[in-house]
Each structure stands twice: as structure tokens, then as C-alpha cells.
Image 1 (cartoon, rainbow, N blue to C red):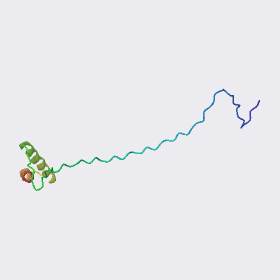
Image 2 (cartoon, rainbow, N blue to C red):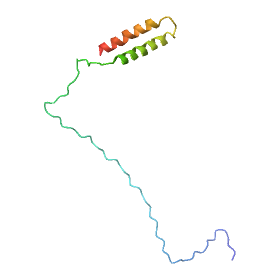
Image 3 (tube, rainbow, N blue to C red):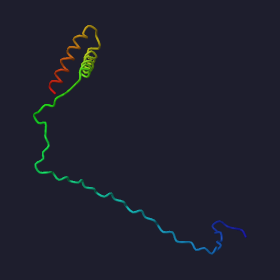
Length: 104
């Protein structure tokens, strides 16, 4: 028997029933909204604020020296490292750092 185009191959029954395929749809998952828990404030307790008060700044001598050194370097860099002004840079940096630390 010669097959022509479009002819189907004859199917042989195997005795097995084929189950009809069901389409599977994915359920949309929504995130639940989580509300922040409110903490009940205790009566009579207030946070202490630093309004109008200065915090004491404690800096060791080594930290002060390193701050002055760093600021003096930036001053020298700003003038392109021209020689002869190293002492001026150092004294200016000392004044700046001391003023900054005293303001707290």
C-alpha cells in the first residue's frame, strides 16, 4: 500500500485509556499587608533630649594630632604643595581643629 501525503498512520488500540489533560492555572499570590505594631507609651516617661545642651567631646591627644595632621595636609594640597608654608599650614590646622573641638 502506497501512502499519499496527508494520509494518517493507522492507530492501533493498546487497551490503555488516555486521560484528558486539564489546563493548570496558577493562583495569584498576593502579599499580606503587615501593619507595624504600635507600642503603648508609658505615662510620665519622656525621652531626655539634648536641646540647648552641648555634648562633651572627648578626643585623645593622638586623635587631635592626627586631625591636625590631616587638615594641614589638605591645606598644603590646596596650595599645590609649594614649599615654605608648612608652619603656617600646621598652625592654621591647629586653630581649625581646636575651634571645632571646643564648639562640640
